[in-house]
Image (spheres, helix red, strand yellow):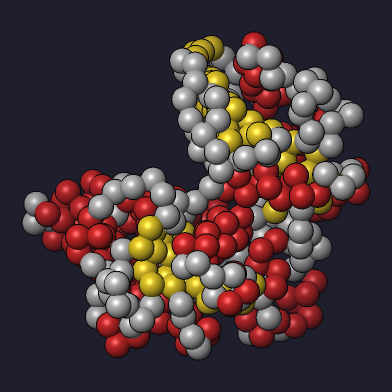
Length: 405
């Protein structure tokens, strides 16, 4: 399986062997369309269940890459140089990450003209992501029209959210006409992490209730009951919910009207403010949690306040999702901040001992690349650190679909 993640100015790819989930190659083409682009390609020889194993030396090329067509062709050339080109008989399919699937796409979908039209129709609710995803798909189709192409949607895992949780309390006809509702994002990560958390507890996912905290530059929370998502923090767009690297998360909607009327800001200026100049970077000028913690430890009050705001929002969502689920078996931290920041995990669970939540200081400080528990042995609710693997999840979902085609 070749997994492709096409962003606005980048293409990430991974080649995986579905016999054991081992990675055979990884790569990234970045700064597409700029004066100097970079392609980084690493051939590997597996490692099992998503592991990278070892392999050849990383190859790096700095040269202009004008568009996504050129980016994917360059990636295909690198794979071919290792004997794993897009025309290889062993390549069964390509799985594409697509950010927004609306209400129609609730599972991995074999791509055809009708699917492409629907992904394009959803561009207004995902203007930064769906166009780039489409460019990657169309380029891949042109390179090998006979190869099955599968779309795996970020929103699909959240389509199980009950209607009372998905709807906003606005005029129903207006909401329906313009597709305004909660969709949620990071779905492949939430699906993977909730399932891996159940495995870590030695239980079937259908028996486990998990709160998943995907904390990267973008951040989202989900409440998963018995393997089924029943609530998530992101909404119509990825702006709602937790405090993020550059996004505000939850904000009074009237802030928009106030800034337009009092500050004279345009809709585009407010959009840029809330999506790119807010969150941690807006609060303290940094969106790297490592740098923020360094500043906190040095006594920087601005950074300390930003950290406290970030953690306060996390605690609110943990408490809210505890109420939604009624019973919680585990809280799982994942993604860049969730996996690597012990202070965030400690602060987010501090004061929640009455809910059965706590971290063991020694366990919490340990670093490892495998799923692990950081809660005390006798904890009523497990606190887990589960490295996410969205590419492996996309590959598995793609394989499950095409092996029967």
